[in-house]
Length: 476
Image (cartoon, rainbow, N blue to C red; front, top):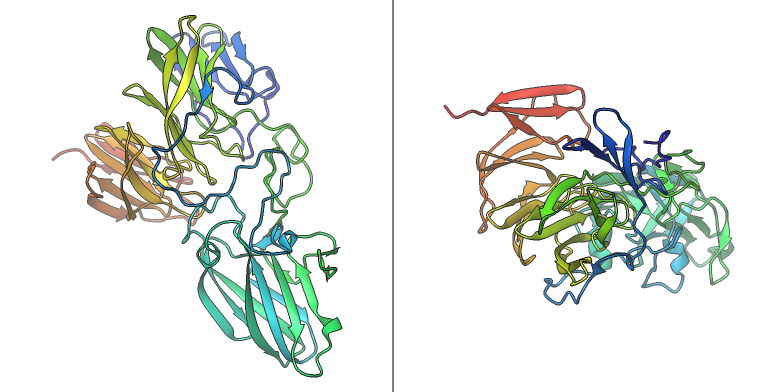
């Protein structure tokens, strides 16, 4: 993929499953002149190569009005350029709410003994958080504890500035703050330590800008120290790195889409083969769009960019059923369905049937049963099992008893492998969440359970890192 085609691996390496279709093997290097390739399965010789799709002006990327979509909450706007910074509302100094320190367990800074007002600056700018309840933590400022702190909920949505003020008394020459994760890692934008009292020296105010590598002045002329005093965690510049590197890390990763390198054209999804009006094509969810490719020469027949998130982390396999193509991703995006049409000249277009923000499927996959699409809506902060009408996009039900996880359909039942490790047996229903069984595996690791379950010959196979478990699920 890299050596033969100049491919650029996505952030976490190539993860797609190659598609074997007749005598062809289809894979996605994501290179500038080889976004997808077809190889002869017997010899390995290249049959054709596809160039990456361009912007929305490419064939068939049409999106009529979305008035039919259910009301959606405010979502983070999609980043449109490399290194673009998020727009922050609610503060006359929005620059204070961009970079951050996340995952820390404590903060400390030497100060004279006395009374202080500690201001903690927050804003939810991570695209992986798409709703309240997905980042919840506790912080304690010199014995003043705040529990169940949810930035999204407190601020009223994403990218909205909020400042929490906490009084503190220091008697040991050091101001101390602790952080404890409840759901997802704690994250903070800045900390301001202001002396209190009639004789307080305002020139000794301490201002620390989390995530910044150098001191800077805000629009009021106040000087903020570079990131310091934190225990654990990491830093983020507060914008999406379109090149595929992880925010907050310096240096490149060579040909693996690091800072400064080329953006990968490939994502993590696997291609499918479909037949439509006698035309056989391969459908793949790339880093930039859902595309249809001719099986004979690799020509891009159509594309649809709405479900692709700004980070290029598109994981779930697309679905083709009942005349609709559907794809979805997380990071503040959602899912969209298109119908293919053909004009008198034979040109194929993908016309949007609907788009919904309530199916931000991360990587657990989606399944359609009896006209209903099932899948988890949510990103890195967790999610909720959701059922929607596949033809209209209408949400039929959502239930937190069904966790974010990977889905499998076998013998008329849905097997759900939760990200935390639980295994559920569900009865498909358009009316409500119906659970028919649940259990926890033995010897569970502490890693997220992302491997999809498999049922074969009456056996359920569950993998947890290096451990493979097999259960008899055959009818007795």
